[in-house]
Image 1 (cartoon, rainbow, N blue to C red):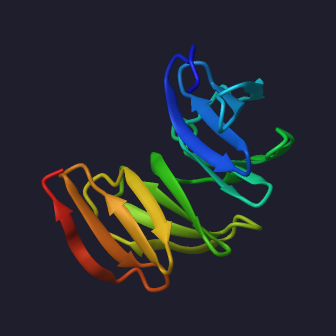
Image 2 (cartoon, helix red, strand yellow):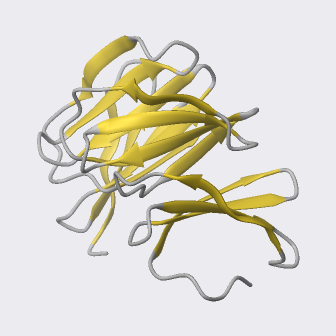
Amino acid sequence: LVRGLHAPNGLAISGPNLFVSDVNTGIIGEYNAMTGAVVNASLISDPAGPTHLAISENDLFVVNPNANTIGKYDTDGTFINTSFITGLDNPQQIAILGSSLYVANQNNGTISEYDAATGAAINTSLIMGLNNPRGLTALGAELGCGEANGIIGEYDAASGQAINASLISGV
């Protein structure tokens, strides 16, 4: 669909547009999600090495593990706050559910919850004791988290309680 990228890592779709972060170049590009046609190959330049992306309405959230931050931009590329959330511990993945932004912190094995509008911490240790959480997704009222030990767990997004901490294993 999209060619010529160096190290595409994060993907997010909003309407007809696909946003792609290229961790090696520090660039987030925008493409037509159906055809792959370039809308803006250099929508955002972020030297901190953007990895994963999430979108909520017109807000584009960007994981910067090298800076231990989450940046916030408008989907048109307008800078809102490159240090929207700070003090993270090697953030790897983000997910949005309702008005909350969830962050997987690889080094301390936690999932943290923040207000997606303000960046204020809601619960920095919502889920603890994970083995290098790397994948994170939200669906309904639940979070799914992939860990380095090959386990995908299912958690209640409000309480952080495990629904099934070993929903899938051996992956």
